Length: 174
Image 1 (cartoon, rainbow, N blue to C red):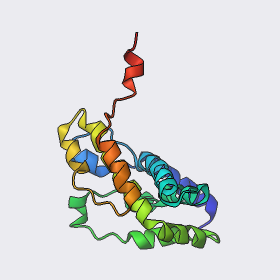
Image 2 (cartoon, one colour):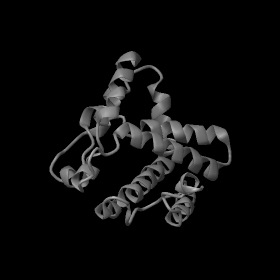
Image 3 (cartoon, rainbow, N blue to C red):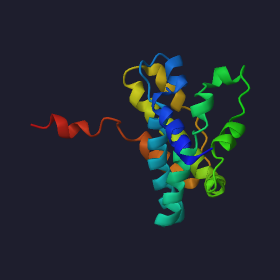
């Protein structure tokens, strides 16, 4: 696939909703693109914590940006739907990434898979806390997440003890 076509295809992720949030009654949930952005930010910081350098941290962030790119073709399916639908996300990803430099990206995704996994789960946790302010069912999505790295576990403990609205203290000051 020519790179220019991939770019337009990935732009469609801005209009693909994260379907699990729809299932619990969240109206206008985050898109896959929004999820990927925050996952990439989290992956960058996890990479910095785990490896202690900007090169690996940046690669972790880039890998996370692409971790759900196949959903431009398959859409985002929640866990219940996945019980009944067989989607070959690996084929969708391989078909998308059919350009000269794609091997570098695939290697990056493989090398930093644990960091990307944790970033994906931590983004889910953060979003569950935010949506949980309006809909307590959303908080269920953030429970029992399994993390693979010590950095992910450390960040999770910090997030658990942080009010998702902490920044509002600046808005309500006189």
